[in-house]
Image (cartoon, rainbow, N blue to C red; front, side, top):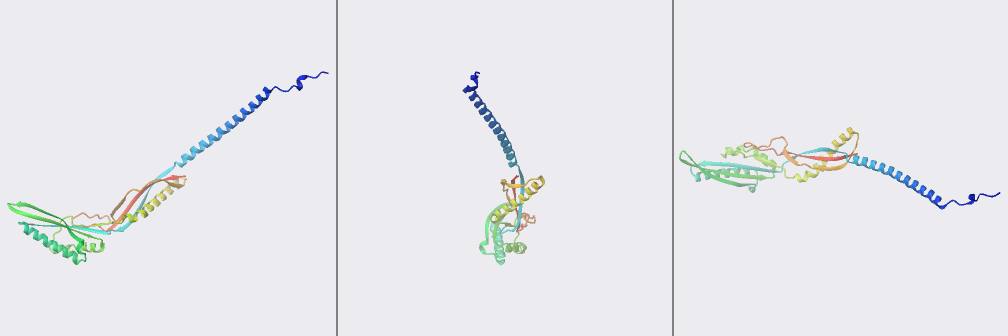
Length: 252
C-alpha cells in the first residue's frame, strides 16, 4: 500500500505567518478596545471630578467691634464786629485769652491749643463802616476723658463772653485701625465660613478651601449713631468698626 505523500508534507510557511498576523491583529484590537474603554472612563471621571471641583458658594462675612476714640480735635470758631478794626481785634484777643484760660483750667497742656486761621472783612452798614475779625483755634488731645469734660463745660465759655460760631464741635477719631485689622478680617472670614457650612448642609455637600476672597472696606462710625456736625454738637468718642468680607468657598 502506498502512503499519501501529503500527510508528511509540512504546511507552507505562508499559512503560519497568516495565523501569526491574525493573532497580532486580534491582540492589538483587544488592547485598543480596552484602552478606549479605560480612556473613556478616565475622561468621564476626570470631567466629573473637574465639574465637582468647580462647585463653589460665595458668602459674606461680617465682623464688628466697639472701640473708643483715641484722638479728640475741637475747632473753635469765634468773631467780633466793630466800627473800627482795632476794636474788633481787641475783642477777639480778649476771647482768645478766655479760651486759653478755659483749657488751662481743665488741665490741658499749653501746646494742645493753637490758632489755625484768621480772617478780616469789612462792609458798610447804612454808610457806617463795619469790621469783622474771625479767628479759629484748634484743640488736639489724646486725653479723651478730659476732652469730654471740656465739651460738657463748653457753656462756661459763653459765660466768659465768648460766642461760639456754628461748627464749633468736638470730633473724635479712632487712629489704631491697623492694630485690629488682622483679627477682624479673621473674624469676618470665620463668619463667612459659618454661612457657607450652613449652605453646604442644606445642599448635602461640605465646605472645602477658599477659592477666592475680597476683604472689603473698613468703616468707623459713631456707635450710637450720633455723628455730630450741628451747631456746637460733638460726636461720640464711642465708635463701631465694621468690615464685610466676600469669600468664595469650594464645595465638595
